[in-house]
Length: 584
Ligand SMILES: Nc1ncnc2c1ncn2[C@@H]1O[C@H](COP(=O)(O)OP(=O)(O)OP(=O)(O)O)[C@@H](O)[C@H]1O
Image (cartoon, rainbow, N blue to C red):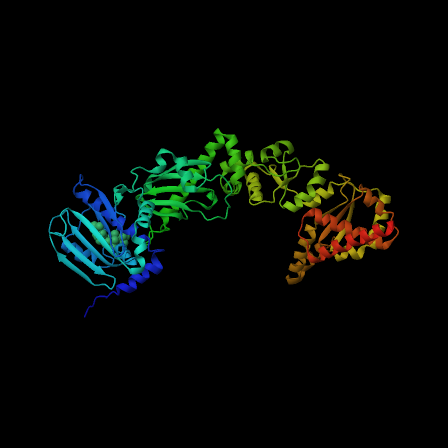
C-alpha cells in the first residue's frame, strides 16, 4: 500500500534557520518577493492592474507586521494547494522549470516568516474570482482555511506576522525599513513602509555611475565601466578600485536578480585576475541558490565570468590606446592583476611591456625602453640576486633587469615566444662574474696564501673564495649562491639512486668544480682587500675574511641564519676589541 511522507514543520524551520538562511532578516526579502511575484502574475492577466506593496511594521509591543500587495491573490483551492504543501509553487511550469519573470521558484520562501513569527495570517482575494479566503498557520504545522468574503474587498493579499516573543525587533519600523530598502530599493513596483516610498524606480547607477560607486564602495572609484551581457539580461557597472586592494582579497560584488538584492559580497562573478574590480549588476536570468544569498555555480555563470572579464580587458586596451597617463596610474595601482592577465593575453602583454616599470641597472624602465637600449633583456629571476649583481653589472656597462616578482619570468618567456629568442634571456650570476677581470697575478698569489689561512672560516660558511678585479672599487666582496653546486648536489643525489652507468656520468659532472654552496667574490680593486694580502697575523686574516663574508651577506639581503648572526656578532666585537685595544 502506498503512503505519503509526513513533514515535521518544526524540523524544516530549524533546517531553514540554521542551515539555509544566514539570518532571520531574510524573511523581509521572501515576503517582498512573493508580493512582487503576485503583482507580476496579476499584470499578466490584467496589464493595467495597480502594483503596490505596503508594509506596516509593528507599532507597539504585542503588535503584528502586515505586508499587503495588489497582486493576483489566491483562491481557496490555491490556498490549500500552494500554501499548505511544502515545496509547492506556482512559479514553475508543468515541466518543473522556473517560469520567466518570477523571483521565487522553490516553494519554501513563505516558511521563512516562521523564523520570526509564531503565527502567520493571510487574507487574499484572487483576480480570477471567487470569495476572499483566510488562512492561518502556526510553526507547529497546523493550519486553518476559512472562506470569508468580508475578509477583504480588493484583489490582492495581506500577510500578517505575529512575532515570537524574542523576535519582535525584526518587525519594528527601523529594522524593517532598512531591510526593505536594502533588498528592494530597485524593485520595479512601488514599495512603501507605512507612508514612505522606499523604491527608487530607476537603476541608481544609470544616472551617475561614479557617484553611486563612491556610495557603495565607500571610496571614489578609479573608473566605472558599463557592462552588459544580454544573454542573461545582465546590466551594470564594473568599478575599478583606486588602489590598495590586495590581490588575495576576496572578490565581492553587489548582485541583484530581477532587481532584488542577492547580496553585496557575491563571489565568482569575475575572473580571479580582476581582483581590483567590484561589480554592481542586475540580471534577469542568473540563478540564485536556494538561500538566495549567492549565485548558483554553473556553466552560465562561468560564461558570464568570462564575458565580464573580456569587457574589463577591452576597457583596459581602450584606455591604453587613449590615455597613457591613466594607464600608467592604473598599472601602478593594480600591476599584479594586469601582469597575471598578460601571461595569457597578448594585448595585455604589450600594455605591460609599454608601461610597467621594472627595476633595472638603468633605474626603473619599461621592458620596451630597456629592450631598445640593450637589444635583449638580460634578466635575473631573483630579487636578492639582482640587487647583489646590479651594481657590479652596472659598473661593467652590463644591463640587467630584475624579474624576481610575481609573473615576471612568465611574462618575459611569453615575450620570447612572441618576438623570438633575442627578446629576453636569463642571466646567470656566473655570467656576470665571467665578465669581471682577473686580478694582478702577484696580488692574487698573496691573497690566495692569506685565504688558505682562513680556510676554516670559509668552510664554516660553506663558501668558496673567488678573486676578481672589478668596478665599483668601493665594493669589497660579493656573495653569490653557487647555482652550479646546487645542481651538482641534485645530480649527486640522483646519482645515488641511479643505475651505475648513469651514476658514473653524473659523478664526472660532480667532480668538475667546487661544491661549496656560496661564492665569496673578493674585489681585488678594493683597498681593504688589497691590504688583506699584506696581513701577517693569521687571526686577523680569519677575522677579516669572516667580516667580509658577513658584510657581503648583509648586502645580499638574504635572511640571516643563527650561525650567520653569531658570525656577525663575533666579527663585529672582535674588530671593535682590536680597534679599542690599539688605541688604549
Ligand atoms: N503574496 C502572495 N500572493 C499570491 N500568492 C502567494 C503570495 N505569497 C505566496 N504565494 C503563493 O504561495 C506559493 C509558495 O510561496 P513560497 O514563498 O513558499 O514559494 P515561492 O515563492 O514559490 O518560491 P521560493 O521558495 O523560491 O520563494 C507561491 O508559489 C505563490 O503561489
